Image (cartoon, rainbow, N blue to C red; front, side, top):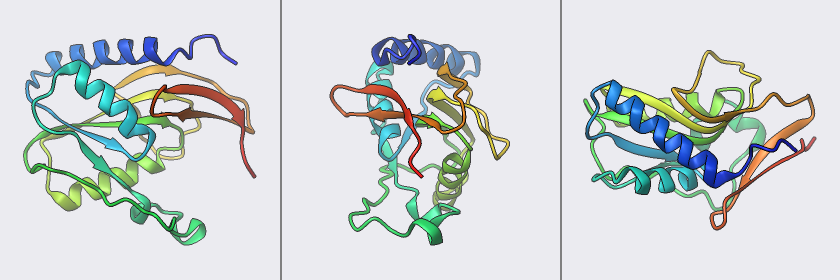
Length: 169
């Protein structure tokens, strides 16, 4: 397992990079949205660290996935919760692991169903490569190059831990 997977260190680095990126872009009052579940856990920590005034939003993108017909619906699907207007606002979208880009694509589709944001900045704890769509993070805690058959998983919410595991068939 890679040595650089200490979640607290990665989150601190991610928060600092995100703060610098927001300042460089002149964004002073962003909205933050976490993608269910691991992205919400990461977003909760970043939201607290950055001291954002607006409440944290949460997306459950299960109905927006392009593999919905293959995987079906989990019997306890939590609804999305965006307790704010997204129209013309700067949004920080947060996920735990960026892999193919399909989860982020689904999240963007859902966000745009709520309105047209001024911008969307993507923050991820881990970019593990393997893109299938042209989506990249604006800020990343770490980047891993994993061999085929391996994936990275965030467990939590307390404590948050990252592990590299064999992919399930």
